[in-house]
Length: 303
Image (cartoon, rainbow, N blue to C red; front, top):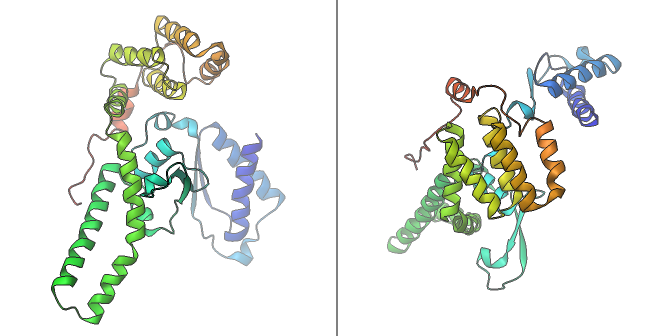
């Protein structure tokens, strides 16, 4: 409960600066509780609306993470998402070997800042990784063409100035080209595409047996348990749980492969409803169709 109080306190502090938010919508148990705590805070420490005038924030929407537990189980495919999945973003930066950034000094680590002060990162962070590669290629090609043009023709001072401005962005382009190249060493692997294919199969509920066998094989190969559990939860959520026979079997295999210390993990997943026995028929396909949750295509034509 303490985390909910801190969320409500932060919102109330915002209101003390920008006025009471008139429209509040909450989805989920925790969000509803935050809204209740916020109301109590407003009564205990009222915001002086007469001094502030009209509220600067019109609407606040609070959504529980539990409203959508499918998304965090899927592998992220945006540029920033892949950086986090593969290199783990920590405090707005990633740590990589200097060799990744083109240095000859192997074995040393370097921190690469990732924030919106980097204009190129701000532009590409939320794009699909395939699109990011095309954007970087386009920017590098543009500078190369400009350089060839400068060499072959006489340029006015203003035209040279524009070219120099483009050159100033070279360090940013080089940084992200190096990072993208490093990410591609992972995304080009057959195992990476196999993982994405099985996620798509799970989301579209196309073949229960193939999904079951894939997770079973992951367990027997003793792949990182976090990867196994993410797919297992995705499998359970999309199917509204697993048949008792499959549930018991996978549970037993995980304990045999990874150790009985993970018994509490499986218990907590079951208690939270993320990994459970099937009791009702799944309505996942109806939900995805009604809300258009799954997109099969990435539009890269404009790049």
